[in-house]
Image (cartoon, rainbow, N blue to C red; front, top):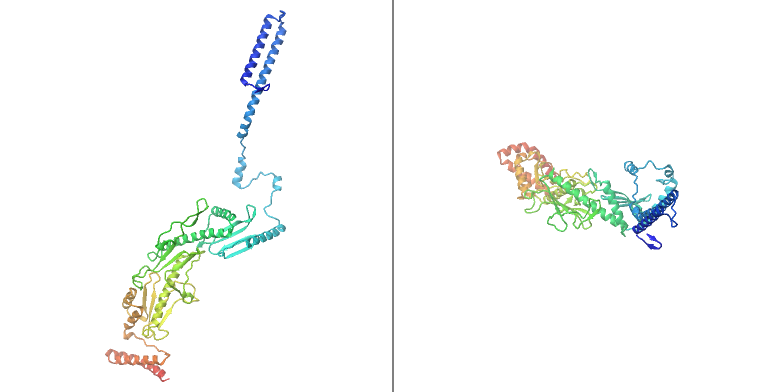
Length: 533
């Protein structure tokens, strides 16, 4: 406290006031008992007046001390009160906003001047037209990835689509900056038969916000957008493929196929760990240094009874990422597609409707067709088996057929007469199966030849020759034939004459000769007529 320009302690000031009051009271008592300097004592009324003056003076001094003390305390408490001040929260209004999404007690005057959600029709069209112009102008200065299959502008909104992966709707105005892109909607196109894969709403919004931030600081925003979403879609595609492969191995294709995870860095079948990009628990994009693993799907596991060369590996399909970071399907060996005019088969997978079983069946059907086609060409070059265009026929799918790869494709080889042998490939095991028409051979004979063929002990040509030689003479059925050359006519005529001579030497053959003689005479007459002409 400052008094007269000097700083005085408050307690010293109190002590001084108390001393002054004590001295005044002492002087007042002395005057009342002994009188004044002249010896005159004050009257009773004068004593009361002097006492009242003393009390009033002392009271004024004490009030001054209290006021001064209070002023000092308020001065020092002022700043503390400012820091201690706490606003009063409107708890009921906050609860109403959280529960209903709005506030019903807003004054009418404020509601009347509120901003409208949409522009009038007369102002909306010019505004959208101007926005579309700005968007197209911005697109001219933006690098568009070559993988984008479709891009269009309508009402100021850019539709960016990559088939089988994603579709994004964008416009300008991220955080009120007209030169930055803003994501309006994000949709993934990767899916299965049940439909596309759905992201949770919160995770989709978080992904959109993260993409917007990355695009805002990038010189090539669309490249960033495509790279991140493409890696996310590839991860989902491979995860779906692995999931479906597990279901197939545990279901209808159990013990028939197997699958292994493979990594790009090693071809030894090592299993990769994580994907390159993934959504974290907080919906933020996270990157890792590990590559997305591929898948090796192996079928026809019985390598000893499949008619293949000894030591040859089982066929397989690899589903992996190529150098261009696209999902590709590669067969382990060369296969021909029967629906494309015997061209090399191209295996693909529809990412918008992933179906691993359909891919597997298509690969097996193409492999089956390739094996039958090789046997067909081999038999047509064999003069003992193929004497005419209908002796070796490959029956199966045509180019105008639907893609029913479950349909049986077989190779029909003429035995003798109108009888045929049928060669096919089991789609699940890869084993050959043989059938004979018209019951010309016992089933046990056919099964023995089939078993030797599957074990690789005999070739397909040898198998058909053995079956033909085992046909009993009594079950031979002759057929009328039309020949295109004189040499074939002579060969068949000589064969008939030899058969007649052979039958005439047997007792049972003579009986058969009598039964078959009318048919033989008619056929021989036809052959001689051909020779004559």
